Length: 324
Image (cartoon, rainbow, N blue to C red; front, side):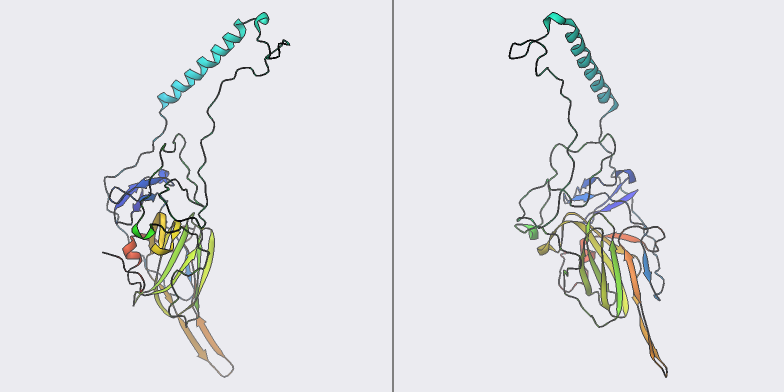
């Protein structure tokens, strides 16, 4: 079972085979993406204390999602109809005989240059697109994700009408952008350390990663990492930190967030960075913590995620105030 939490706090559940589909929130009408639960992630910090894992309890709801597809009765009727059309064409062709073959438009005899044909429906349109810098937002709900491909189970079909996107006030009249990997969303804070943290984004969506000081709650790093890319945070001072991130498409600078398919997650436990040094007669030896983390599940990972809302994501940030 997959948990889907909306930015407004509403919680939904879906089956794993429905990953990749979209869900409309019944409270705020936001469009949510059903993603596989990121249950196993990789965090490797040299010399850091192990991360304690706190069990996460899901509150079941009565919301269920069932894929809509073509029924077996409809498919059978379509097959019978096509068979009748084919037999009718064959009977007509045999019935006209060799002396009744239609002539060409030039009257020279022989087969007509353009004999009648039976049309068949073409393939369904593919879902694709790019999320580069665009013109100011107008209510255009039919945009599709840049790197995420919508894959439907066999027998399912796309909705016949576009799904509307609800624009928050901060996005009205603002352009959507795709920042480059490593671009700062907020200025760095406390940069006198020597530790580093390599962040790898193996998800299908771009991400905004926030490193938070556990004691003060202040944001020390807030950077953009594109899908299938990585970036190393540097000059991290010794201390304990929380790592949280959001994923989605169509970044709006004024909102500090994604317009489409926004999702907020937090790593359970803390990242601890240390620095120490020893001196002897010949040299000074230093010891520094360097870490690695993946935003996508990996085999052999040692950390877990929990879903959070937008208010929790920006909690303690020195630049953003989220309404309760």
